[in-house]
Amino acid sequence: MTKLERKLKFGLGNRIESQSMSGHRGNVLPPKEVMQQIGVDLASLPECDKYRYFILVIDYFSKWTKGEPLKDKTAVSVASFLFKLICRHSCGKIHINDQGREFVNSVSTELYRLTGIHERLTSAYHPQANGLVERQNAGVKYKLLKVLQGKPEGWSRCLDPLLFAHRTTVHRSTKMPLFFLLYGRQPILPIYFSNHLDGSDMTDNDSNFAYRNNEEEMSELNEDEVTKVKEMIINIKEKAFDTAYNNIKLPQATQKTKYDQR
Image (cartoon, rainbow, N blue to C red; front, side):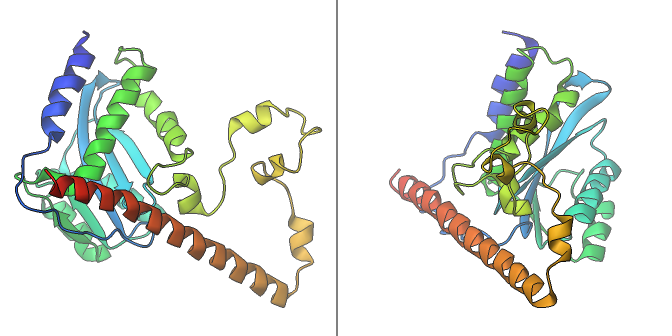
């Protein structure tokens, strides 16, 4: 067993192992919009290109996952990542993280004050409160190990493509791709163009994924038609969100039943 494998198997396992709790689990409803509530966590890996950590965030509704390698886990490094996240996806409502000094400090306090985000801290005695991002961290580490075939060299360069692959697959809870729930469209993947290098034999089915220049068609739409298209897009989004929300509640109910029967 390599050093990285031992680190993943024992160090990570100890971190996310569930503690035995008595009583029944409360029925916590998931958010109904993207980026309303996100979980934030840090994980460590053997040093690569001077990077020793990666920070991971997960949107509790769409399950969208974003990660970034860090050279240190100082308050400034973590706050800089969160600031970039806010600039890209807006402020949101709730950020969930543990009570580590990289999260609980004057820098993050001021950031949350200025943006109106509520910081929710998890207890050291109940880390399951941020279990979604903890489990995702475990999954990312495991996948990195698989991709690198047990060799830690280059993990910082593999993080982005690995997370892109994750975001473009169907999530077992929502039954939809993470990418679609955040952006409202299907992703354009390299495989679609590798199969049609010159674009001459692309079918109508392929056009659902590949880019088409429809600038001329859009310029011919009048104001009423634009309004109808906008309303149609909003309606599709609302239906997709409702479906994803109901899909999330199903496994939650199953997990609660199993937990209460212990």
